[in-house]
Image (cartoon, rainbow, N blue to C red; front, side, top):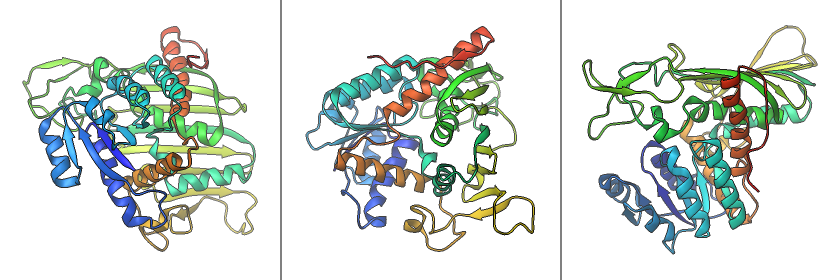
Length: 389
């Protein structure tokens, strides 16, 4: 299966490593990926892709990668506002497309991408990789089996410090022209995607947004990621998207949701977390301790204690044993990318649409669109699909 990667920053490299690892971890893999071509606007990155990752060739022109006859799958890991152009071109070329979230910088862009891919009949995937944490998959099993009873409350959050330092450089993530919206696209999308996977569609929202750090140092040549830092006295530019986004929500099943995301908060390092409360039990999970989950079940056979039980991930949960045997032997973030890419390859081989795909990306931006309207109106807003037929 020939793979092209467009954008060779951190995420493009993570996917490349994942495809390299699939043959070493999964003997029964559906296909063996081959890294054919890497496209990046910085020539040195492309050269590194060939030298260190084993790509056959590199280019600075994404069209060359997309049109390459040896390419079956195009992985788009470029800045958000480039997603539409790249994904539409890949779909038009008949290539299967995996795009990092949020598949466009604005809801309308995502809708146009989804329509183009649907019309082309290609398999699509989107990088909502937290779905693939083994304990998250177990949480889904518990909910579907009715172990928690009727869900009444869902709390989701993604608190990260990557933008808490005012000296953090004004990378594309802080610029509407490069990223589109801010944390509502970057990290709240993960939170709400998990919520809809675990608890169903969201019917309405009422929320707000805020930009706490309004100016940041301009990047120097060779820099510009959201982890790079400037110096006091450096020239600055305006931040043009939101640092914080949050809302109350009502799910279609009648349960209540509470969601928050911030990149400028101090304390939580990467607190992508959910709490789910039902009439028979509850569960709590946090990316910072992704190999643990707290479970409370009222119908447990042993009721000598009244409180949460800590469950540790291990090879009895989905995919975990491919990376490490036994219980409480941890796996990490990039292992989730391997599981994600393996499942996307399986979908391409079988011809069955992958989940999450562009339809799931569209489901989130439909919620995001209502949230943006709520920022402006200060009122509850109904979630309507932004799909373009």
